[in-house]
Length: 438
Ligand SMILES: NC(=O)c1ccc[n+]([C@@H]2O[C@H](COP(=O)([O-])OP(=O)(O)OC[C@H]3O[C@@H](n4cnc5c(N)ncnc54)[C@H](OP(=O)(O)O)[C@@H]3O)[C@@H](O)[C@H]2O)c1
Image (cartoon, rainbow, N blue to C red; front, side, top):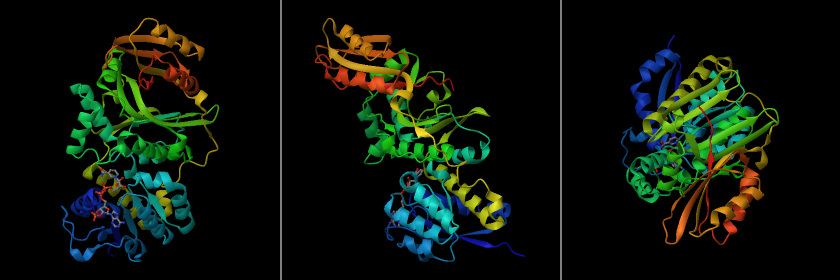
């Protein structure tokens, strides 16, 4: 008896879609023999049918109507690789309502409409796989929902945006200003023309929301998170951090206090001890540390984006989909849903504790440090170290303070007071210190 044929439709034939087509075509025979099915790349959807593409496919397989792929009864697996949230949501829901498997790389879509998508999959017997949505080629979704299923997760943190990591690495290695490195990143294609999604932390926040849902069963909106980007960092911050024994990385940090049943999801530049493995993951690479209550701490690193790494994750989902369609639900018991719904609440600011790095540009005159220290003391924020140096403007000095352990509420009040002092000349820079050994 010959193996059944599964038809695959690819909505979006750009960077990722072409990568999937290329690598699935090249590895088809091996995958088919492992999965016991025939994988047929049936159709692909684009916006502009005339645009030249690196990966050539017969014109009759191309359409500019992505919904027609979602509705096509002969297609069982729909890959949504278009990006954006409007058309992508429509394609995804249409395919799921028809009981198909949808494979997605779209973290923005999942972050915004995840609850609706999962409900549609449940209601209509469809399935939604999204390995490529977080950390590109690193199989972190599979690790959380399958390999680490025995665990609860007190802490998950990591670098989830290669563009920011590339910029921070270059700033450190070449002592180069942010704007100069960003311009290079754009020239090299590492950053989009509109860089804000990456450098302001939103892309990382979308991925953090997906990981938080997988690990804790709660959808956290980006407006419920602390989200800060890297655009205010200077080479001086990176040098100061090094002097203090830290590297700076843009991190997603997801912590759960199981005693209080509080969850915190945040994205911010973080000072990590120089010996921490993730502090030494450079360039466009991503890395994630997952601490489980049974397994201890596990680490994952690899390429977080790009045609090939992302295609690797999408093809892994296509293989899971094929196995599910071939062998039935039992073969993929742990597939989509997290461990179970959770009633934990979001941690209030006073529960989010840590040490802080504060850089102030102040008038270069006597008594300023004492005034700053007394404002901090008023809010019970105690100073651990002080570095004084010249500032980038005349008659000004740079004050870099680190604090002992405090919390988000106290440091927030302190910063509001410091901002209002006539001797503080610029918006203070606040960075969190991540005292994570691994
Ligand atoms: N690139 C990465 O490294 C990476 C990594 C992880 C996840 N992702 C995610 O993967 C998804 C795709 O990213 P990408 O980099 O491949 O994007 P891309 O290069 O811009 O490709 C998008 C593709 O979708 C098509 N498209 C867009 N809107 C459409 C519509 N309404 N109808 C039909 N086709 C439409 C475009 O057609 P035209 O070519 O005709 O414009 C293009 O072929 C996004 O969700 C992204 O966040 C990307």
